[in-house]
Amino acid sequence: MMSVKLDRVLDSLSRNYQPFTLLSRERLSEVVNIVRFVEMRKGEIFQITGGKGHDYLFVVEGQLEIIYSGAIKSIAGAEDTRKRPVLLPPSPSTSTLVAKQDCIICHADRDLLDKLISWDEVVHMMEDTDTEMYHLMEQVRNSLVFRRLPLETVEMAFKRMKCQDVKKGQEVIKQGDHGDAYYIITAGTAEVYQRGVYDDKQHKVADIKEGDAFGCEALISGSTRNETVRMTSDGTVLVLDKEAFEELISTSLIKTVHPSVAKTMLETGYDLIDVRYSEEFDEHHIPGANLIPLFELRNRICELDKSRKYIVYCHGGARSAVATLILTQNQLDVVSLEGGIRSWPFETQSIYEKEIVNKETEAETPVAAKKASAA
Image (cartoon, rainbow, N blue to C red):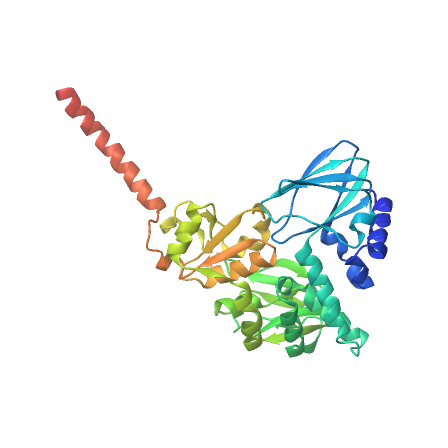
């Protein structure tokens, strides 16, 4: 949809359609991220699937018929859905749209729309908050860790955060140190370095800026920092201490499953990811697992399909917990295997065992041939 037409449609939604009319200007700017628009020519047929809840369907222009749950509903024009949108049946049910005229429809994720409305209410309750404080709250809310948490959790976390000034060249966290806090950059830029897996050199792995966060891995795994973050300009960071992080975030985002449950999940279509080193994987792994070492995960997320569901495991559960958080932040459906492969009571495979079997087979073949010849 061309930008001019999109602007016109968004303007129409904000002025005429509930609940878009309830949103503030700031929240309306986010609407484009939670809705999709579909243009249909007269006579076209289109199938649409709702979300987990009853998503909203609005007719912005034109007329159409909607066939769902064995019934046919006619929409004579935009007026029919302005105050009361069509509620689509939840996934996996589908609805069939038949355009009676050229149409533009809007499909809105109801859960995400409710979150926008709720966030506006949180902001209204803080009307005395100054502009700078409001801007900081927005940065916290938009941080990857907080996007999938309830709004009340975001508000509680914000109230427990402390603002800290940082200087250019300062190492906010250092690889090998104990993890005691989670950070969000609210002003300035920084570089992320990690020590090589097979050497002792520091390698730059990322540039981060305002709105980016760091420091969660050590808090979740209980191990030392696995990266150094060095400021490349003066700036400020919001700091959430370990206790608050564990209380508000870690337990909310990281889901674990017992091995017996995980085995059933694998049999019903879940994919398996091993986040250990390749040497550990070669020694033994769960059949069917895809190896993506934790230190490579951020750069290989694009290899994963957001329409799939995943179980992540490591040796004892610490690394898979970190991986689960990273993938959850990136809108993937993920659980961590409780106790890791150490607690897995079922079959595992080893590359070395396969090699031994192959060699034994090769060694036995000539013998078997001789016996057959003698007979």
